[in-house]
Image 1 (cartoon, rainbow, N blue to C red):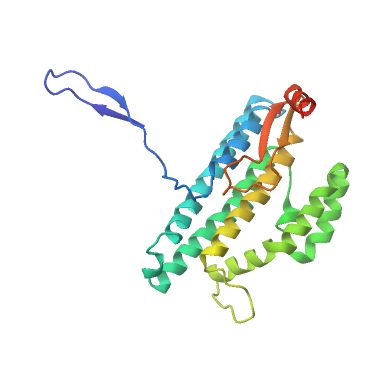
Image 2 (cartoon, helix red, strand yellow):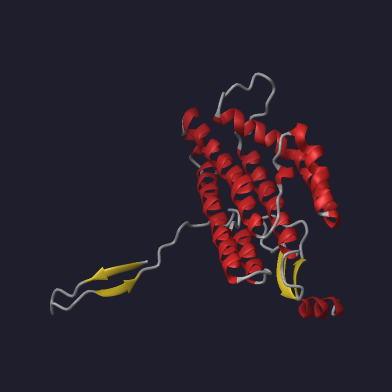
Length: 249
């Protein structure tokens, strides 16, 4: 950011001094939230379409980082050494903030970005009673991408439905007597941070790759890598780079 500073000694006009302001400080055990944002930004460079549509995609790529930074802030507070010294209301507020930020990133910001790349992923977030109908519609419109329906079904069953119900209950009624799970512990906080980002990263890479210019690829290098790992999971590269690397294996 820029600040105006005046030289009062010689009564000179203000000059611009550039000051670097760090948005957040990341610890060695914190999630590498930037990697999803950087992947989306890199994919955007090579999307098909005109400059206006790519500018819009780039704008929504930046909005991904906004929510992830909020999630990181809550996660850092949950994992501090003095977290257990807080009262139950403070603890619950931090968990609610983390899960709301992760859900907002996943359901809102990620969808907005991929819509700009030409994808409608309502099958991931629709009500259960509407899933099969929308899945059939999606396959009809995207016959080459039936795997996305399988992925949606698996994610909804494995974690997403329970996570969404818990978050909604926390935000609205607070009534967990029907057996809805409560995820107010550090292990679940890390697990859901990793899971939400792994699924989002999968969708950004897959959907983005099919909207890029043909000479560019998104290559998966480390399939099991999460944002808590040092190694990147994906790389955006020219097709010639992919061919050369495969030949050198």
